[in-house]
Length: 149
Ligand code: DQA
Image 1 (tube, helix red, strand yellow):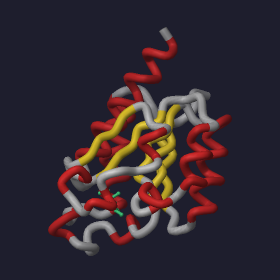
Image 2 (spheres, rainbow, N blue to C red):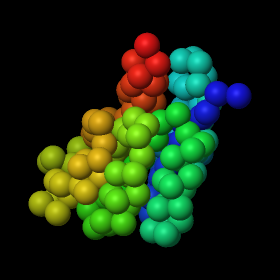
Image 3 (cartoon, rainbow, N blue to C red):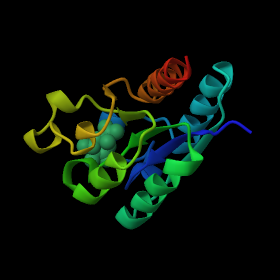
Image 4 (tube, helix red, strand yellow):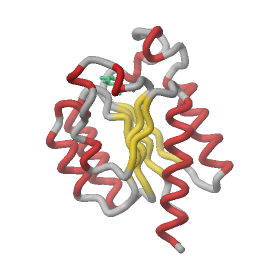
């Protein structure tokens, strides 16, 4: 059984669609899950899509990805800007990591312009709304196939 791409979502992303829709759009997290499933399936991959508001749970899932995932797509949300623990967990991975944000971080408040996650990620997709996730899945699939060849 091939390993899935983990798509991990941090705090407040459960409120997607109703939370600051002028910034994050009206697409719900369930809609995003559907988009990711379709895009991944078209590329021959399954996904394991999760969301948590808890930093420790996010760390646990990243640790689990060491053995159970082919790649990680992560939208760490606010923890991206604050969590050394999430960074340290990601640094323990040897699989591709794609950081994903709905909004365009480089154009937002100063504190959002850097994330700890970027220090561990292969690359970053930011600013395309829900489409950021589809692009991140494509990047992850590409990195998986490059690693296999
Ligand atoms: C976000 C950007 C973060 O700065 C913010 O804390 C979020 C969402 C995004 O997807 O644009 O919760 O990760």
